[in-house]
Image (tube, rainbow, N blue to C red):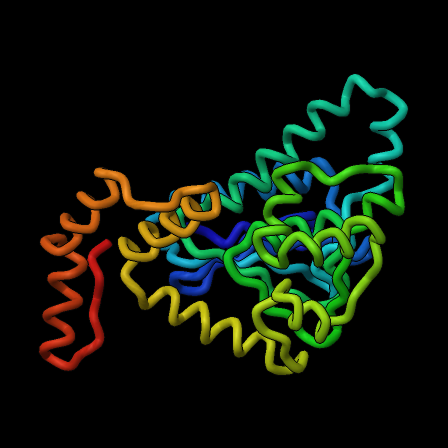
Length: 264
């Protein structure tokens, strides 16, 4: 895989070893997400998820902002021609779904505003690490818009219904310490520690068995989608893993007291 970085690209992707990072890059607008940026996010998440050399996907923003929401100026243009709204909604839905359902672990690295659509993108990731400059909010109620059911479910899954109501019905912004308390983020760090901590954690994810990570991500999502017990297929997958190549390597490494090198 490549580093698809041009300094004027609104979204670009870089790679460091097994970790691909997707960057929002419109700092003059605090990375407000345009329709074209949604398309690029869809493309880069798909490319990283297909690349056998990538084991972790990070999403972040340049210029001290994660993303301050959708580009409201552009949304205003869409509102003048209602026939374009369904296509806009569809590309947003597909981009978020691609990130949320990525086979590989995903992590949002957050500084500055993470608001509206930006918070929606972060909620599509498996993990959210933020520094103390971060501010969070979901603001459709302040604009006369609504949050989709898919977005709402991701928020409720993370913070619960009561906190979701608080965020959605008021549209208020919150500091990082409150976001950590309600479970919206997983880590809150000093700004000078964010990069290092994310890199270390991404390394831990990359060192794990990709086979195991993919399977357990599917199982967690199945539970969130309503599964309450195993199916014949999941029981068979558990049994098959015992004779699979990743466990053979993991077992051999454990017995030899060495670091495993997983084949998949």
